Length: 191
Image (cartoon, rainbow, N blue to C red; front, side):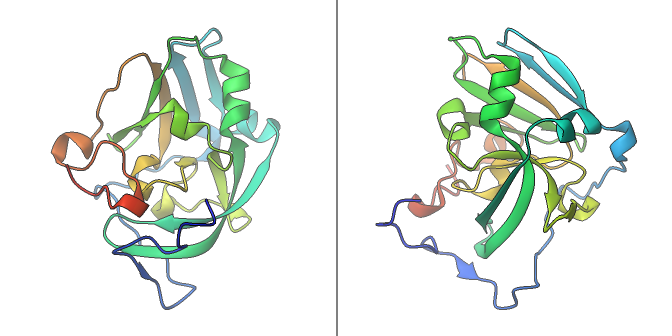
């Protein structure tokens, strides 16, 4: 984050209890064991893959500490995630030059779109651990995407598929009136 930006985006409130971490979802928390987890990465890539949980854990591990901003106006500072850096995902699948966007799909029928430019920020990861432990189901485990500089809805919980696209394709909340981009510092909440 640029040093000229405040840490807490406008319109957000910092959770007063550092242990608090609200759970928001579509009302569906699918049971996905790490043993049954599969992540398909396809679309405009030279090397489409299907990764197991073990495959993800065998890729280089990245640990980040990042602030988490929910569109419902709460923020949590210093959340610790571990997983695979987005740059390592791209190195594996080799996006084609015409790929400009991704759409993420969750096992709960959720989807969300993100420009590749945003995914290529330094601290974006495909996460499989929260505070050093497996991500619990209520927080989207076993795997979710974390895009710290956007509102949290831009990272799918219960991740099952990533598709690289040439053109933007709005996801679940975007077609229901949420902003297509989701920058907390400019309050891109709704369209």
